Length: 124
Image 1 (cartoon, helix red, strand yellow):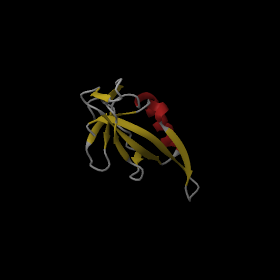
Image 2 (cartoon, rainbow, N blue to C red):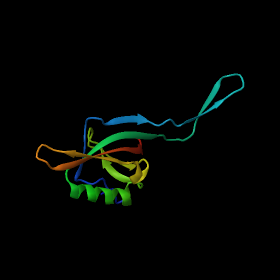
Image 3 (cartoon, rainbow, N blue to C red):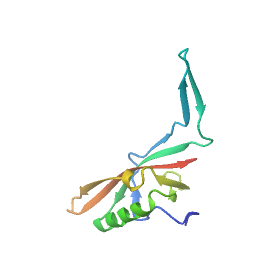
């Protein structure tokens, strides 16, 4: 359990393919009259953005995840990075509205879901 009490649902796996990490620009740029551009840090700590594809195995889990996202995605929660196993405090950029869902039909005819989203946190 995290300090916030919220955690990423354990029934939703994160796919290794398509996992991406990028630092947010945390500078403010101001052009000068002479054409040079001044650049200053805006924050002491910059957010890191993680592009994630989550795999949801069934329609029931899809419904559970949508409910979790509606209630929790906009708040800070504990998430374990798949490449390191280290737990981080993150939130979904844009909350529930920042998640795109795609249905996938397997060879057995069952429907599964992919959720594409961006997590953000400090020190990832």
